[in-house]
Image (tube, rainbow over all chains, first blue to last red; front, side, top):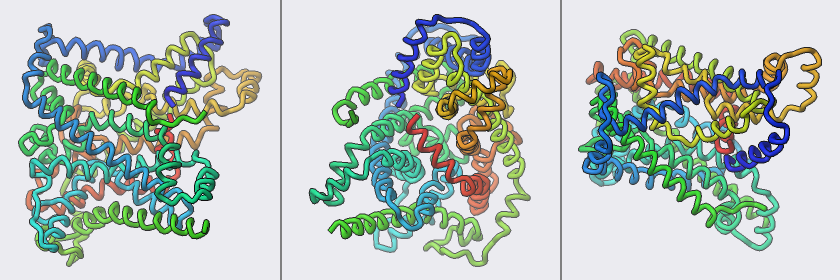
Length: 319
Length: 276
């Protein structure tokens, strides 16, 4: 939809050119009324972007003015094993989380997109995790994944398996975090998909049925292609937010909100955003943290561009 | 055959949805039951589901023995100030973009679009430094002030709403001698109540649950909002962790009530965020 919007803006611009800019009564009011956004753009976006770029080439501890050191932050970053570890963890987290959440959300939306009894109740059930803060989720998830007295281990022991360490285990921490994040986020994505499914014409299903297509076939050959525009959007948006995941990992792995203890065990769940926070706000290495931010930005930019390029191959646009 | 097919689709639908609703609900039920147990029962292995005795006191103890009420008050201030700022600033900016002609309008609107693409991560540190210079560290101001400067999501939502209103209203208002601001405030704004409700509820949810900004900006405990307030209680309640569960459940109750009362607008907001 963002792309569509730019189209309309382009056509509007053409029509406006003819008239030429005039600062009449209406023009003055218009400018006055967008002032809040202008302020935000100048102070909190334009200025901060420049500052953050400058900091990334500086040594800055907030007590003394920033000092230009050229590429040193970036050089240090390349040789920093924790940075590579957090990059690897971030990618691992995103690659596990985004497809899982997207597929489950689509399946749930398709299941819900019919006149079922108790529809509202089902929708509410899937939205309660969405409206919960990560602090609430921490204690709710603890009821399941507590290594000592959680429900999951209770179940494992009952069926004769070994209890697990879950968040305390280097191998399991990210998959468990992903499971919890999917549990929390899937309802939101499901609602986005439900809105998209409203636009799939019912008669396409009917003609598929006449041709004898079963539930799975219809899902694969009607729903999936027709909803691919929404899927693209969901993928792009959730990749961007997941790459910047902070709150969930900080809350779920940190000890009572202590930021330096988060990301464990032994950096196994250290992600880029958390590392940035520790470097910037705990150790006051604002320059180094800014360099991490820009590297993260660049990686995200490249990934989004790849997604946009690949989109033509699989996203079905109606003519 | 077709009937059969529809039945099948329904059956599968029910199975999927009931199963997943169970997965959604069970952890909440378990946690709520946990919040009513004694510590011994809370940590019992194998798990004892039903609290015996039911300790409602866990909740009143949290209320009396912690700063829960203070954290709740702080959360309320942040949430109310954010909601006010969002509905006023987003609707005003959106009105100008939707209904007025002014210089640089399209370039400015491109900037709003562009803002959406910039990941917040690159702006966090300079924003912190700005607020530090303004003397706003360890106050609630940085948690809500940006909402008064028209965030893009709300601007899009409201712009869409204003675009859908017929031009005749504008002309009538102008004939009556209204300035563009008066037209927006008296005529257009009251016509967009559903979108304003969506924006209100969405801002409420984000701000009530926010963790990152409080972590960055707040240092003294009496300024904490609920999510980090409850999170940092764990130090004081070692060996009484069932209290923490009760505190967490308590912090969920206000937003849960708001959600249940206004579910329709929540769903609208979520679906429009995908269709911006």
